[in-house]
Image (cartoon, rainbow, N blue to C red):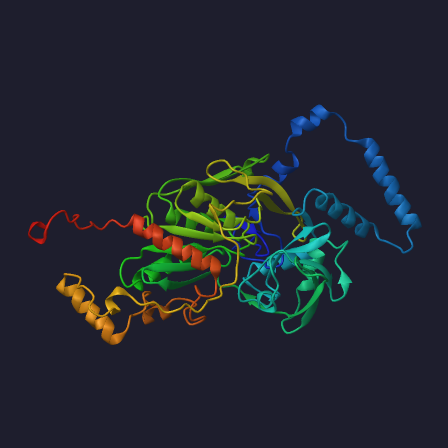
Length: 488
């Protein structure tokens, strides 16, 4: 079975033959498969420690029974035994951490449905914070991103109903719905003096995992919106397309993981393996043997060692952090942007009776150097915050070649070029990407992505500098004498 990360792009392993995909309305986290017999092993974990502790906590069990009885007899409305027990189980799991949960029949069904890769909803990655729903990241090209939902937004009301007191699964259930229906979200956002209301129309969410384009001659760009089951092969295809349309050798690559909430673990491992020649990529540690795993790279680098810059921000979580951490630890890429989300725990979905399941935190994952990013995140090598690009009008300058009676260069070729410039005017210094690059994904959207994205422009400038230092072409010997002695 494949391993998967769940996130608002939840990818969860439900059965040996199921394909992990994404659930856009859950916290970014990783899901491990449960081989046969593992559930029993989990129930008996640390049995020795339990035996050593002696009897079960009878006093607490008596208190539970007494409270159960009081509720049954005195609560203002009649409550069934099964409903009370469901609440107790849910509270037992949600009290552990924000990601453990009890999945009732309808919630478990929604989870299975989400693995189809198509679902009616908003396309938003969320988690819990202080009893409210916090946006980890909106998924690209979804209703949430088009409506202007931003990472870090705190959702306090859904259609006027406060989310305080709701479980994450209940809040997610309210956000899901039939395509074409709308929901009004009341949001608290940093920098805003009062809550803002945003109406979002639900739609069928179909996520495109890998998008690519040329940024400049020889410099490619790959945007990973989410890690899906096919992201590994799709990434390799994108590299090949960029190499084909690079108008020469591919000299550098920007990998954009901003607002990527995670997804399928196998996909992040496959992409890291494509870029790293050898060594450990990621490992997990937990109390159950099934949660102790490690993944290693096979020999070979698909990009042949070209410089790589990876963009991250606070919406980069789970599998995104695994890829960024592996590239950073192996010094295979420069990490740029702002600190990532910090989701480094592992959740396991455990079906109970075919109708219900529990999602339980079972391990933490670690980068190759042994770093746990849980609640810490990945620190960028170069911090670049998002900023608005404003171009200013520069006063035109004259050059030496435009002065009357200037000295010639001394080279017939250079003098000829000077004359051409004077006749035609100076040409732009930056060569635009070849028109055939339009065959790559997203090429037909914004005319110049770099001109609108400060972090991406910074990444491209750094990449160009790294490419200059990295180039292996042999320079001409230094001029050390008159022309007659110059080496040809």
